[in-house]
Amino acid sequence: MFDWDDLRILLAVARSGSFVASGRALGLNHTTLARRLTALEASIGTRLLDRSPRGVQATKAGLELIEHAERIEEEVLAAGRRVEGQDGQVSGIVRLATPEAFGTYFIAPRARHLNAQHPGIELELAPESRTVNLSKREADIAISLNRPDQGRLQSARLVDYRIGLYASEDLLARIGPIASLAALRGQPFISYIEELIDLPELRNLDRSLAKTCVFRSSSVAAQMEAVASGLGFGLLHCFAVSPHMRLVRVLPETVEVVRSYWMVLHSDLARVPRIRAVADFVAESVRRERAAF
Image (cartoon, rainbow, N blue to C red):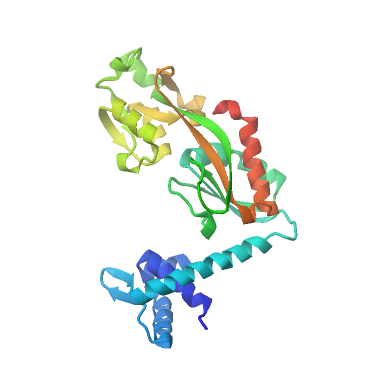
């Protein structure tokens, strides 16, 4: 009989390619992981991992066992999702994964309203640009830029939002008004690190405008601060711009990208009270302030 903990360790090490990294993820000492997997290999008489200074790679036998282990992992997670929260209590941890701008500038400032309604809920907000896997419980709820097309997931369009071109009042005072796209030629731009952009429309618009780029960042917050400082023009989320930033939208009728946010939940978790409460809080907050988007 295989021990599920040993299979869980095998999955973590194979996915990270490192005993140290997987040890941090599992909260275990890396020497403990190595010892456990060596014992597993000895018990079945088969080498599962090739160890080298460059890292760890699964052998052919290891890959075959990993396929079974991943199916077991999914069943274990599914079992937990089905029984979780059946006592009906609205309390516990809920992890919400969002794009950076939505999480930082919309959810975080309103989290106190969720706490007032449900003080027993501990909200974990992950405002990141990477895609999360709900089936593997990397998050309980995800706000996505696209509707998922596979998996046992429930999704609903949350809201459409706009990205516009902005500059600081100080910058416009120095260079004068911008009345056309031609007037932007040669002006300094704040932009994304191109290979990290996952929005085709934004990438195309960025390439057409940002001929003279003076600052790039994968962080929306960093770009906003740079634009607000007067360093250059930038494409920003309109709902995230506040009056105290002293930013001016430039060519609003010409430069605009419209995208959608989708709320996604795993079907097994949709009725868990604490997760339903957070999903309802997000949806109601957006509905109430839809005009901001």
